[in-house]
Length: 403
Ligand SMILES: Cc1ncc(COP(=O)(O)O)c(C=O)c1O
Image 1: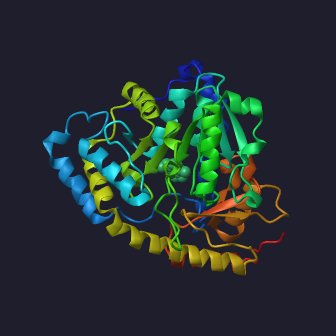
Image 2: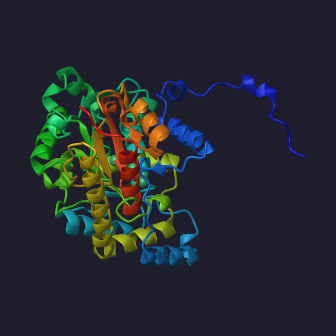
Image 3: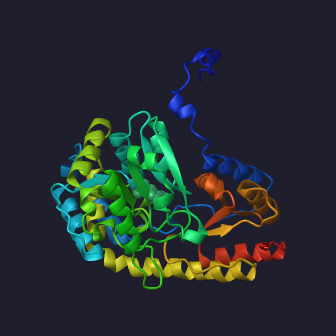
């Protein structure tokens, strides 16, 4: 017999202020909207997701399976990761970015890069400290600072600035106080990319103010038309101030395995390591085996993956152009970032309108902060036929961009 829920729980102590003061997580609200539409029988096409739709490449799964069967992997993992993992990371950084990384002191395996981005924040931010975060932003870049009782100074990313932050707009007193500066290029959600000239300015800025520069390179390999992004460490002197986060989720369709790594300044890597040794046990050893395989054989999988996303991008670029949007082909990421029509008050209203009239789901830009509220994000994580079907539905319902 099951026990009925106790009414005494209404007297349960409330969660910490750091949780209750957080702005609502828009993705949870979006889930409710989708559930309501499905309840009325809607056959939704979901362009809102950031979750890769394709399976992990077979040889990577095999490497994980072999790792699972190996009793040497059954105890707690080593906090620093396997030596082979760290060596594979260093070799990858050299091959893909021409960056020298010391596998002993400059690599930290992660249980997904999101985990590392949260923990690097806890390593540096005390109550009242400042992080600088370009906005719109991937949520953890701001939220981890808020959870640590710190303040976030948002720098707007605008189409006019090619979605790069204007460093001169940051007040001097914020620059003096800031401990962390987050950037993420290729960018989620805007799909903006950074060139070396911008990174040079950013590194000089962080060196001037002794700010720890956190570069999130989660989309480093999802790049189109012969574009490949620089690493922050392509700037001489960046290793004095920077740490860079990499993910297996998008590059290798491994989001469900939860794996990433950080590379960079040994002191910063050590601070991250120190938080992690207190709070987790590191990346499961069998998963590390799959990651080692992925890094050592990455070039076998990437061209196919990139081609698939590029074809999908082309379908959406053509489709949205036909619907009146002026879209340039994106250079990277699995997203497109488009303005909402002027007649809509905000991005949530636009999102509700598309669900109600066309059974198409997008992500309202507000999910990435106030600065995103006149935009919406669509993802390339559905087959191109599905993307075309979404465009056709919008066309049928007379949905068009009007400025
Ligand atoms: C910019 C950015 N950084 C980090 C992550 C988290 O990736 P991971 O799966 O490695 O935790 C994501 C996931 O969508 C992302 O968009």
